[in-house]
Image 1 (tube, one colour):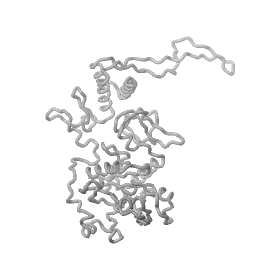
Image 2: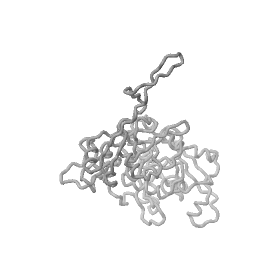
Image 3: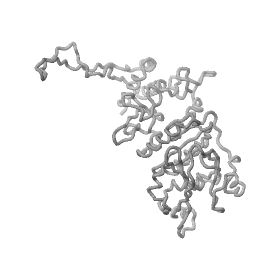
Image 4: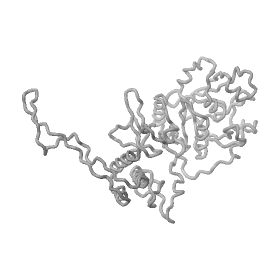
Length: 420
C-alpha cells in the first residue's frame, strides 16, 4: 500500500523516510514497514504473519500498478476542478486506489492489472453504489500493447475479470489509461465463438476483436446509474453507479446508445435504476467514520466527536472510554485493549537507545592516530532501560493517558513481541 498513518497524520510512501516512523496500517492499526529501494517502488508492507483485509484485498501489487496509481494521482492533483483527492482512502470494506470529487461528484478509480476474482469486484461495486460513489475500473494501456490489439489482432486470452467488467459492469466497453488523464475505451466484439450454445461458455471460449473508440479524459466523463444483475443466481437487479461515458452497447443495433435511449427501447434489458431500491447511506460518501458512533455505549446526550482531534468516535475500551482514529487516540485504545487481552503484563523497553554515545564518566583508552597524536576513546554508553508499564490495570491506564505517541507505539510493539 502507498499510504500509512504516522505521528503527523497520513503520509505517502514516496514522501516518507524511515526516520518518520513508526508507521501503522489505516485498516488494522498494526505496524507497517516502509520499503524503498533501488529496485522496489516506495510502499508500506505489513509485517510477516499479519492478517489484515486492508492488505489482502490489495496484496501483491506490482511496481507497474503502484506507479500507475501515482501518475494518475499526480495528474489529477494538477486539475483545478478536482478536490478532496486522496490515494488509497480507507472506507471500511473498500479502499479505492484513487478517489476525488469532481464538481462535487464523488468518484472512485480502481486500477486493475493482476487477476482478481469476480466476487471481490462485486463486493467493491456494491459498496461504492451504496455510498453513492461513481466507480471507474481502468487498466494501463501497456496491457493492450502486449496483446498487439492496436494492430487489430484478436484478443484470445481475455481473463474472467476483464470479461466481467466489460460485459456486466461497463456494458460493452473497457477503459485503458494511457497517460496523465487520458483514457482509451475499447469495445470487444465476439468472434469465433465456436460451437457452444450456452452464452457464458461461448463468451469464455470466444475470441474478441477490439473496436477502439476515441480518447477521452478522466475529468471529461460523467456519473450515471445502471441496473445490474451481478450474478446469474440473482434474478433481481441492483443499482450500480459508474463514472464513464453514459452510453451502453446494444447488440440488437450493434452500436452504443445513450443509457436513456437504451432504457426506452429495451426496458427488459436496460432497467430504470430509479425504480431499483438501494440501501440508504447517511452522511458523506467519503467519510470513513460514517455511522461509527452506532454500537458505542455512550451516555445520553454525550458528544460523538473527539473534541481534541475533531474526528468522530470509533472505538470504545472496556472501561467505557471512547476514542477516535487519530494516531494518538487509537494508539491509546489499542494499548489498553492489548493489555487487557494479555492480563496486563510488565513491559520493559529501551528508554534511551542511543548506545553509540560515549560514556564520558568512564576512563578512556588512548590510541595513537596516523600522525602519532594520541586520541582518547571512551567506551560506549550502555542503553538505559526502564519499565514502560508496570503490571496492573491502573498503571496501564496511567501510562496510556500520559505518555507521548512514540512511547505508546513502542509499548505496542513490545506487547506484540510478548504475544508471539
